[in-house]
Structure formats: C-alpha cells, structure tokens
Image (tube, rainbow, N blue to C red; front, top):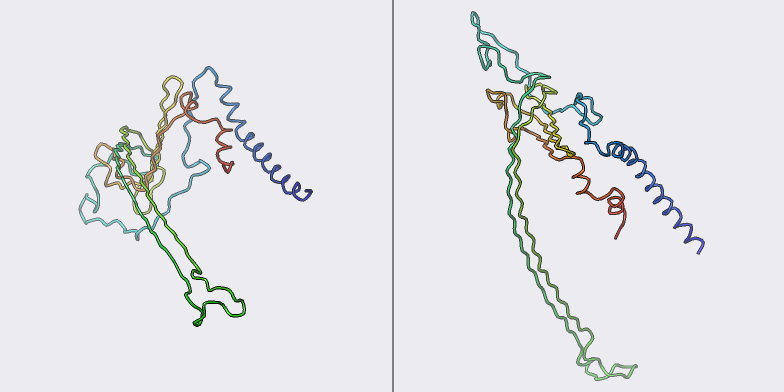
Length: 253
C-alpha cells in the first residue's frame, strides 16, 4: 500500500505543476482581457516582420547568378521588362497588393464493406484400430477441436466542404532571393465594434507574376500561408474556456 501511494504522489505532483504552469501562462492574457472590459480590443502595433521571434529567412535552391549583359550603343538592357522604370514591387520594402481569392469545394463519399466466416473441425474415429485409448482405457474422442469465427466491417465516411474568401491585402517585400523571387508578408486588421478580424498572407512570388497594377493573385504565391480569423467578444463566446481546453487535452477519457 505504501509503494502504491509513492507512485501516485509523483503523478499528482506533475498534474498540480502542469495546472499551475497553465494558470501562469494564461495569467497575463487574463489580466489584459480584464483591463479591456468595456472597451474594444486594441489593434496590434505596426512592426517589422523580420523582428518577430519566429521569423526565419527563406532558403531555397537557387540557380547560378547570371551577370547582366549590355548591348553596345543601346539603352535597352537584356532581360529588362520596360524601357522606363518598372513601378512594380521588386526590392525589400516595396508594397504589392495580394488578391485573396479562395473558392474551395470538396465532396468525398467512401464506403467499405468486408466480411469473412471460417469453420475448423477435426476429430479421430479410431486409434490404431482400437476404439479405446491404450493404458487410459477411455474411449477415443470423436472431436478434438471445433472452432468457428466470423468478422464483418461496414465503414462509411463522407466530406462535404465549401469555403469562399475574397478580399485584398497589401503585403511588404521582406526578402529578395538570389534568383529574383520575392518573399512577401502582409497583415490586415479590421475592428468592427468589439471584434477584430485578422487576415495574414505570406509566401514567395515571381516578379513576372505581378500584374501591371502591382497586384498578384493568391493562387500564384508559392509556399502560401493565408490565415483568416479574429479576436474579441464573439470569438471568446465561440471558444471553450482555457481550463476546459486544458482538461480536454490531458484527460485520457
């Protein structure tokens, strides 16, 4: 009984420590939310995306850089897209507009059926011509083993999903890769009453895909990262309290 109690106490201690850690992590957020009671949630400050703790420069395989060549007695440089200066984004700090146009629809319906039945029956009618087992002087068993087994499976699954998002957001060029591709990052916040809607876009674009009006479609962004959500009173009501979320994760039943 004592050894069993010794094993229970460490588990209980870990549970208490985990609960205390979760409370401390949510303490600051809770204080901020209490401080904004009766006021709309504040907008985040405009900052440098490359200064974020989780920011990492993009590194991809790049082709060998080709030196620019000029024709003698010519004002036109090989590879130039316009005679005059191109106003489209091409360097760090430039701004371009991303046209977010997401219209996804998926309908999947799967059904699987499987069944199997087997019967095994074995016995002995005589033992070397005798009806009784020697020494034991007992009758020969007519049945030694009889087994029956059956399995069946009937599985069904379906997915019916439809998503649509159409909006525009301005993004900033944060990095120019060696082959000329641009790494962009953009964030937009809109506050309506006591709810803030956020739209975040990021990825890699080719300068050739940028249209003449300095816009690009979201379908032409490589490694695209698009997030649309919000925070505020409506979002708080739609989410479970943090304590309930914690127990849903740690409880095994």
